[in-house]
Length: 168
Image 1 (cartoon, rainbow, N blue to C red):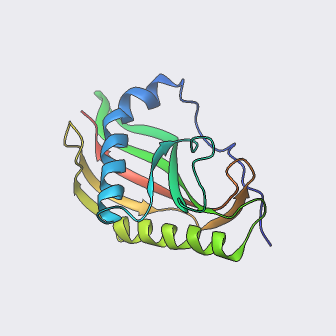
Image 2: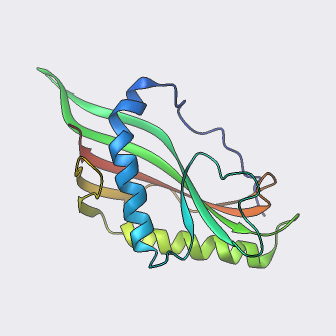
């Protein structure tokens, strides 16, 4: 059983609260993942929401995208606190061609497992963004979700994380 990949679950990038509060952490998170995927990385990625048209091919088998689900700061009696929880969805694509294939699914799963191993176990530390964002923890939420993207001719594995960090 395979669900058809859909991209309806995300907050609008026009939401200024999400844009301003996560701009630096997005950059740092992408750099963290790309650095963890090796040198050179086993897959390119960090594309916001969708892959560029015809990006995947027989020569470029894997890539990943991200989208914000929500970004919520904590509030205390004095107002907004710097502690923020950002929910993010990662889509790991494995090139399949015009229909889902076992190899495309294997590529997507391999990439998803590699990314998950980078941040698994509540990763915490300083991100390599310009603000040196302090992350208290990155936690996986929800199971792997499998699908297929007609637009990218790829099998897709979706991962979701909650990232707790200090917003400046």
